Length: 235
Image (tube, rainbow, N blue to C red; front, side):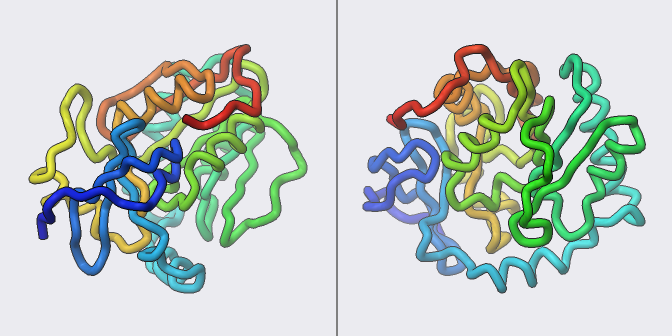
């Protein structure tokens, strides 16, 4: 259902702007667009509890036996090999119940670790990584700003942050209410944060990163610069 745009009292969970606008309502949820960082987010009152989230995640057939799932990861690993130089240690952030990507990375010779807030909640002993890769996770983040700050702080100097998540708007195109309304990706009740190329440009500027790869649809790789220090105030 397309609503009349209206202001909200909910701050953007990425940049903390309070000028978000409700741009869509569907299945009992609202979706708010931030004019600053262009994140579309679902307000906290519509979030599932942890138990319901885990139940939903366990329905996914994300395993080494899923040929399509493995092929998707291999394509991303190929991109990482092309654009990320000098990578030895890798963290799979948001690996889910079976750390498939970690296993594939280890088979490629990387020193790979895995973390997931539900299934592997203890941070690995290693404190910093050359590459942190997160696939199909950022759309689930309740506080993406805080999570990104944490991840960047765990990157080694000149390290990389690779993120795979479906973009709500293609590169060089404005947000479209009609397109968003038809978009299947927003219908998953665990999906609460939606990014686009403009969002990642904002993230790069805010956290002193540089974008080294952006396919315009679902995958971006950012590199830490020597200016990546904290704390820095949100806008």
